Image 1 (cartoon, rainbow, N blue to C red):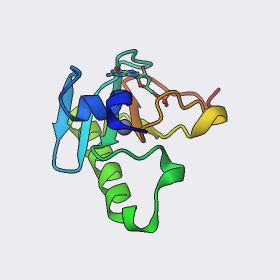
Image 2 (cartoon, rainbow, N blue to C red; image 1 turned 45 degrees about the vertical axis):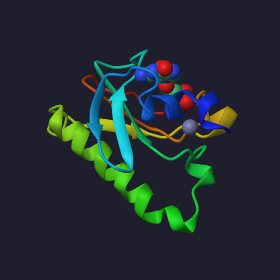
Image 3 (cartoon, helix red, strand yellow; image 1 turned 90 degrees about the vertical axis):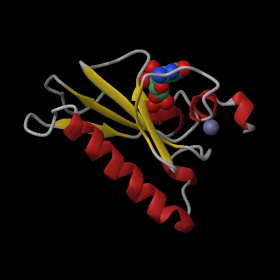
Length: 116
Ligand code: 5GP
Ligand code: ZN
């Protein structure tokens, strides 16, 4: 998918606004537009890749970095002691609506299991 057609590529390139809470050379984290919990942050790679399913062996370091950014953002937002959830939806039945890999960091309320 060309980056001009991808909403998260456009956020990563600064072409669309977002409330950014973390930025580095490989990743970005910003508040979800339609939060499903008091804290709802999305962690994305700057480079376009569709989902967890499109990750390749060479993305091992990037994948680990995204998880560490998710944990860091959760810590910074005071979610460590209460707990939180990190979710990656994949594809249609996984409930993915934006085809640019992202980790949801959800917290600030009790989560239910199993997810819907
Ligand atoms: P998915 O359904 O793909 O797992 O998650 C996509 C998430 O992106 C949704 O929670 C949705 O609210 C969020 N989202 C969609 N478009 C935008 C946008 O333009 N800006 C921000 N900040 N979040 C978005
Ligand atoms: Zn993209």
